[in-house]
Image (tube, rainbow, N blue to C red):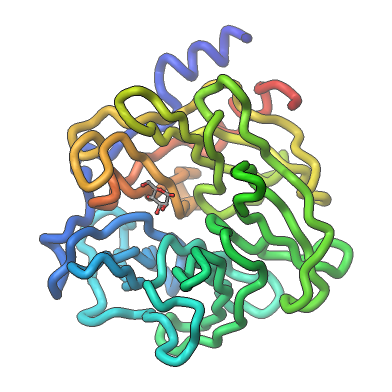
Length: 317
Ligand code: BMA
């Protein structure tokens, strides 16, 4: 481990916003049990979070919250923004944990979220331009599958999507591709769990992939089962910019771990679950939005160059 890596780790790459959590059920304009795991994207000069809202039946839907500075003064839609399609089988127990990218070709936003179907959780792909009207594109993969995100550009004429199926009880991060967003193939394991490590039990994509000059920055969650329960922590990886099936680097250590009261107390204690990120171009600040203890929304910030420098110094997997 180089000195600069130890230095960065000890001085914490990511800093929590002191006013965390930034959104709680008490802020909601209608009754909610929990608000957490938000997708994040820039829209019309604002930060838009598409927040998972769990109602008091235990079902979730997605609601948009907008803020000019991405930290304070959130304007929350007065009603659910995105509910399961009434007649479709895919979301009978709700929609959860969205990720969003803005497609580089036409400006459409691609939302990938979890639909809780009778057959288990699976990924739904939904397109929108304004977060008011939505085009449902169906379900790329069968259950059980979660933690998916489309890349915002094509690679050799094919779309690429990261997702996290559970196959033979194993929860690795996979990547698949498609010529048309309907037919999917070329399925490969991208980021596997690591036996014995902090991310031995399950891994899954966190925020949407972020394009940098050094490659696609991947913020992922890793889970370890402990005698005290499961711990959800956060690691980093870097994928080749031209061919995201190629993992260039992966952090040995986690870079973010639950420790604050709002991360240790709630419906599921010991969870930090990043699902969205925004880069503030003027300050080069990376803002990572995460669910805290499956109860509230929190944000941590980092200098994007420092994060890329750190992950670039991590081992080649
Ligand atoms: C995962 C997902 C997330 C949740 C996390 C921690 O499996 O269901 O929605 O935040 O567990 O409970």
